[in-house]
Amino acid sequence: MSGESTIGRKTSGNGFARDTWIILKRWLVKTVRNPFVLTSSLLNPIVFLVLFTEVFGGIAEGAIGQNLGAEVNYVTFLVPAIVIQTALIAATTSGIGQVEDIESGMFEKMLVSPLHRGAVFLGKSLSEIIRIVIQVGIVLALGYVLLYLNTGASPTDYVATGLLGAVGIVLVAILFSIWFTAISNIVALVTRDQESTIIAVNVLQFPLLFLSSAFLPVEALPGWVQTVAALNPITYGVDAARALMLNQDVMTVIEVTSFTGVWNTLVPALGVLLVLDVVLGAVAVYFLNQASSSDVQ
Image (tube, rainbow, N blue to C red):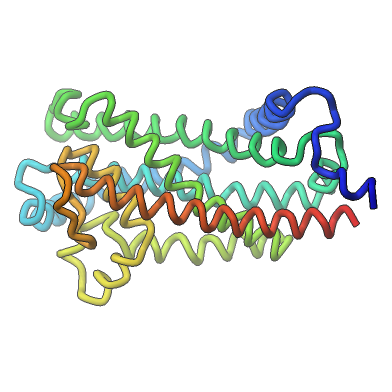
């Protein structure tokens, strides 16, 4: 009992920060050695960005102009959605990586090692955040290239809130990714099977993506889709990023007028995402503790 009760405590002598760095470096090295994971998870959003802007841009701009103003280009409307999609896919791969560790036996080895258990999970999460920052940066850069090719716009016409707004979009993507990272890890710990995890998270992410404000304004969608979009976390992530991109109050699923301009979107959207992060993060921790106890025994 005494040996079992010490599992997960810091006994390595390195300290929590050092243990976190060890795990972070492990996952970063793993990603670098397998660049297919980084490129493949970015390929889907890039394809969506290029195809949607080139194929549907002309059609969608009519609906966008009616709701957000004729000056809003479909590229600047769509890029925030692709940013959130990028974070969504990165969060999906978190669960898949967890399954790989379970299947290889590394998960159990980490639990019985002298590394602090909290550092094991924090280090992995930080590696995913770094990947999201890199990928979102690439999407934002590509979005400007497409906008420049279509309109010749200057960088100041791209992100209306400037450099701070661009940084804010990255932070929104990170905040958004936490709740789905929790879901993907919960699925991984329940199924303990890589194929089942991939199928389950894909079944969730693609319907949620299309039943949201990602590709068209909510007002332009059928009534039942508007109802689903109001309950869809992706809507809140996209609207928060889009508000920073356009410097407008773009949220329609929740009417907030207590603040000014863009904050009428940011405050409720970030509030919803934060609640989801806390609740689903707690559930994920519960499943991790349950799996830890089972594996240790």
